[in-house]
Length: 222
Image 1 (tube, rainbow, N blue to C red):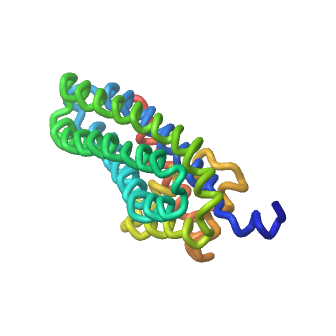
Image 2: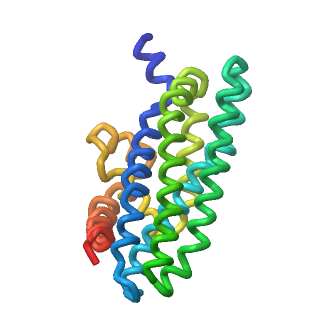
Image 3: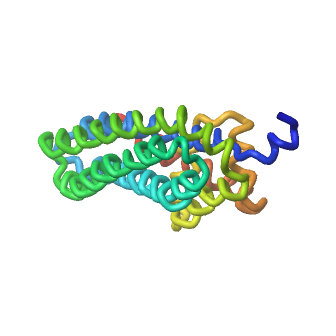
C-alpha cells in the first residue's frame, strides 16, 4: 500500500487508545468501591463521581458506534454482516449493566454500606467482563473492516460525536485525561490533532494539572 493510500485510511488505533482507558478504569472501579469505609460519604461521593463519568463516557462511546459505525459497515461488508450484527448486539448486554450500575450508584453514595458496596462492585465486575470481551473482539474483528471500508471523514464523525456529547469542562478534563494517561507520544499527537491550538494550550496549562490532582484523589486509599 502506498503512503497516499495509508494516509487516506482511518487511524483505527485511536479506538484502541480509548479502549485502553476503559479497561484500566473499569478494572479499578470495583476495588475503589470495596475500599470505601462504611459511612464515609465524602469518599463514596468521590468514587461515585468518577464511576458515573466513566459510565457516561462508555454510553456515549457506544451510542456513537450504534449511530455512525454499524450502519456504514453494514452497507459495505455483506460477507461479514452476521459478524457486525453480533458484535453490535453486545452493546445491549453492556448497556443493561451500565443502567444497573447507574441505578445503584446514588443509594450507595448516600449510604455506603458493605452490602450496598459489594452489590455495586459485583455489577461493575460483570460489566467489566462483558465489556472487555466485547472490546477484544471489536479490535480483532471490526477495526480491520473499518480500516478497509470507511473513509477518514466517516471515521472522524465518531470522535466528533463523542466531543459533542461531553459537554462540561469537568467532563472534558476527565475523559481526555483518562484517554491520554497511557498514550504514547504519537497517540497523544493523534488525539490532539482535531483540537484547536487554544484548546491544546488550555489542556497543557490547566486541564492536565487538574486531571492529575483529580485522579490522585480518586485513587488514594480510604
